[in-house]
Amino acid sequence: HFYKRFIMKGVLMVAEKPSLAQSISTILSNKKCDYRKGFNGACSVNEWQGKFPPTGEVVKYKMTSVCGHVMSIDFPGKFNNWDKVDPVELFSCPTEKKEATAKLKMPAFLAAEAKGCDYIVLWLDCDKEGENICFEVLDAVRSSMRRQDRNTVFRAKFSSITDKDIVAAMNHLGEPDENQSRSVDARQELDLRIGCAFTRFQTRFFQGKYGDLDSSLISYGPCQTPTLGFCVDRHDTIQTHKPEPYWVLQVSVDTKDEKRLNLEWERIRCFDREVAVMFLQTVKGQTEAKVISVTTKEKQKEKPLALNTVELMRVASSGLGMGPQH
Image (tube, rainbow, N blue to C red; front, side, top):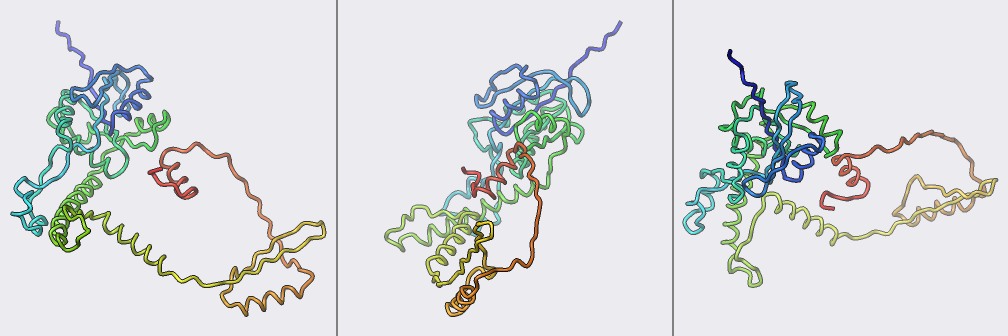
């Protein structure tokens, strides 16, 4: 008699940071997962068994995380010598991928945890950077998984760490977007080439020209420097602004039932004093006001719903002027 040994398939799930992996594991395992520390000391691994929605089979889940980007882009060592390399060369010289934080040994850690897994679910943040990290993770585990294709790679899309959103994301898994990932690769390369080339150029250019300028390093940020330019332009506009006096008519009327109504001037304000005085005299010469039309609107305001992270940020930004840093 021959017996076919049943081998439970494995699913590796990767989040963007350890705390997020812990929260997702707690929700999906219904607080029934086994915990262990990863060999790199920074990431934990949670394990449990459950149904895998894309295939309907019972699998062994293994949930872990990265700590931000797995890889970073840099120039080969020979281009890091400021004295021997012309900044212009940095626009065309080769680049290479390096581990973002070497001491974490993240590629080796991911490869070890992915060994023998049949599927991978990517729980990285739902933005372009998160999409880029998805493909960094896939590159790290490619040689360890049984196979890696459209039938074994899944992407979870979520906007908040609530039971409802996490379960819904797990039940509606999609695919990672390679185009968004490549756009981040392009942005990273541009930041590196432009930032390093201009930093080296202007550090050399300004050295010794201004006595009170700390010229040991004058960095150039492809995003920050133009933004600083906008701020300076706005500051100059405010400083050179010449205020002009204007006049406003503030009129109120008393109704028959002894209620006072404040009226709004359709013109809002007037920059010509003589014209404003003319309007004032016209109004002061009247003892009665005639209502020529009445518009009535009925509005219903629904009870506010609970906000997920994205909606909370949007409402806080538009209504309270708060940014993500708050």
